[in-house]
Length: 172
Figure 1 (cartoon, helix red, strand yellow):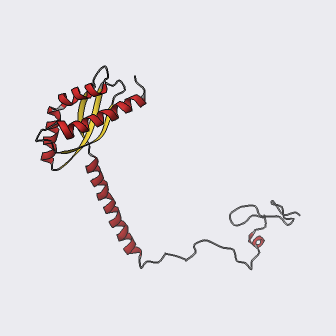
Figure 2 (spheres, rainbow, N blue to C red; figure 1 turned 45 degrees about the horizontal axis):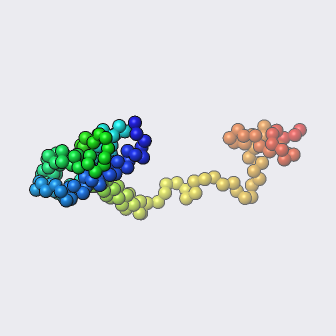
Figure 3 (cartoon, rainbow, N blue to C red; figure 1 turned 120 degrees about the horizontal axis):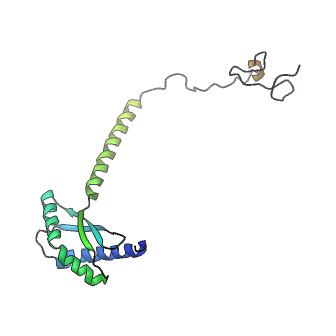
């Protein structure tokens, strides 16, 4: 096992090397407009997963995946040469679904905005049911002790203040 900081540095270095190779050295015509978005490496530094996105149609994405798969050996040898690690990690290319997820989230947000606008239109002319103030407020003219029954309990069964100002039963 290797510490996480070293693994992260190696993953970042692999990402830089792969992006540079795709930009400058790999001249496959099937390779579309590729962006390397992330690289992750296992704790034993044996396997690296390179995430990428491709701008274009599904056919262009499939061609780019095939081009990356055929260039995997050249890219791995360059990664081994430039990193200087004892064992060059095997490289796996994975299509990053970041763009599709972002588009899906945008669609969900648009649906939520439409529902909110529909609710706002429905509530525009509506008035609340019942009283404007649904909470009971004691009248300022009434004494609150008048609401107690003969046992000193109010309507909810709570013990009221006694005649001497202390809580509990009134003094006899």
